[in-house]
Length: 173
Image (cartoon, rainbow, N blue to C red):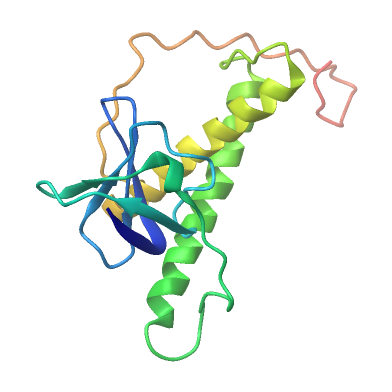
């Protein structure tokens, strides 16, 4: 096993139940047997141990994966390659914001069933935000040129609420 550390660049879902990610400036896929922990998000610094390379990937020792403490803040601007880091940070921030809005819409409209236990709700919401963040962040690479399946049947719109004619505030009753 070799020791690795670096900034997470991109997340991938595994069809085998685990997770996968790539580090910044590295084409290697680091694969886990378990789903990725919540702290493994694009832009985060991690350290871990992984086995020998097989094809394009390495198997990560799940127990060794942990957030990395940085002595100095990550460079966001300034000289050198700062602009690429800044652009990635902005893309991630935008994807995170959009994910928060999407999860709010899903939960607020009852599209996601949350557990009765309040502590478990937070975990489910956090996992949804992480998942949508990864999806939206990946969309920035393809500029949204992804094909997603459309729902088979869209729900019929509800009749608009009536507004009193003498009521000029426009708020439905």
